[in-house]
Length: 432
Ligand code: AMP
Ligand code: GLY
Image 1 (cartoon, helix red, strand yellow):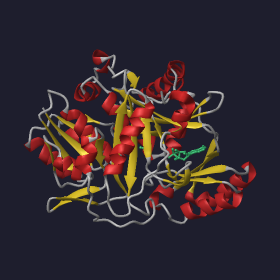
Image 2 (cartoon, rainbow, N blue to C red; image 1 turned 90 degrees about the vertical axis):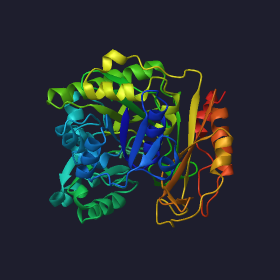
Image 3 (cartoon, rainbow, N blue to C red; image 1 turned 180 degrees about the vertical axis):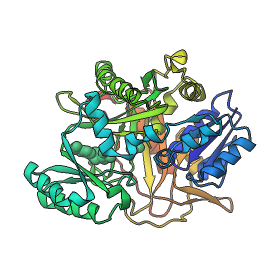
């Protein structure tokens, strides 16, 4: 079969790579793809932007595409699944109504409340209610979290350590910092604990979690500095014991899908629950995403044994139960370290030649490209997060050593990566 993957990040490279591992998948086309998907055997790029729905539809119909897999949230929020399904294409990813889980934080909060899903206490304010929002923040006190309601490319959340910071964040958001994403604000209680990403597959009825992952969002070592899309991840996260996963299923995933269904939303694809686990194992939902995580996908998919397209087709066709349980490589763990352009998540330069990729692969590392492109046979940087280097091992010490061995082979001007990815899991004694 032929699969079209929409997107151009490390997540999409990992999706394309995993799909091509299956005997059933002959070809993957990535729109628009990156330097890694351009160079991978069996894969090619199609220069169409993720929101060029008409171009994507025409290509898919003309080329007998059997499955369209949508990576990023933006096209899902804009209704790509609705558009392509109307043309009788098979799509992995929720329709616009379901994608609101990610595209509107206040809508997601309402759904959580209805479903009885544990989440931080919050209040929602319209842009015109900025003064009431400031009064609410002052009354609740700091630390407090201010969130733009809509999609803001990961930049819409401010953890305010003082009421003044909260007020500044409210002012910035309501005076246009995030455009329409700031039409509404969610202000919520600050939670502490460890964050985990639990991604689950669903066909609208059955919902089944993938292996849990942990991601390091901050740019700086020791989880300091600005938040990024994610600087490294590992899976399966030992923090999520089988008992905790059972509770996540019962307290979060099953109520979410049941409540979507009650609202007549037929949600098919990935539900990604960003969770905070408190020191005494309370589970709180920080956010829902309507797509695979990045870099979580780079550590989850290498451990998957069931062919990915089988699971995706089952979600799209509404027969997920028939292909369960999902099979995993139980004897392996995976760790990914992201290499970024110097200056990211602020401004950075592009167009730097990347060397040592072959040597890193010879060391056994899996290299998933994100912000790269091929120009005149050279691979150049073209984004903030450039590459994710994944190591696989029988324990986390081995997996991280593999990832860092790979990283040490790779160079480009200004390359930056965190040297402490996985410090928690290694300190927990789960490295062995
Ligand atoms: P979100 O996009 O809502 O997941 O927020 C982005 C990041 O902000 C999360 O991954 C957390 O690190 C942090 N965050 C969000 N909400 C809270 C909260 N209520 N308490 C503490 N940290 C939060
Ligand atoms: N790694 C965080 C995300 O994909 O949203």
